[in-house]
Length: 166
Image (cartoon, rainbow, N blue to C red; front, side, top):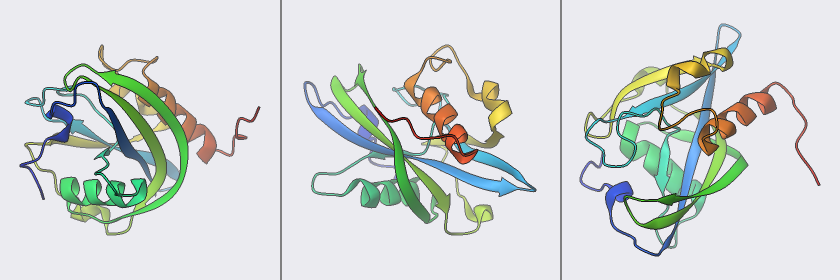
């Protein structure tokens, strides 16, 4: 795993950054649960916050290839990427950049027991059901946070909710 690069902390003042994240779900005895790692407390951007796994897409890399790379670098495990289902933007005050975040449905290709946490990147992991979302809410990432809204939408779509159209 690559712990020398911390793209979320690398200055990118005035730049747009593309990021891709995975809504990695797994069925545990009939209950769909979401994989959410907790950012290390030493991180400058959102320390100690639970998040969807993923990260920055390198120049010339597809979002799917970059997402697979990020997850393998951070957890030492391969992932199967499905369809994108949510996109939002935000200003990253640490980097000074404007990020575009694309979220994909995904599943681990390797056995989940093989997940390896690098303590410099993530301090903990959870598998949460839809009704356990409150476990990952914080003052930095509350009900109105775009990623939390994406997680809610992901669970809705897993339940068979219709896709929003204009």
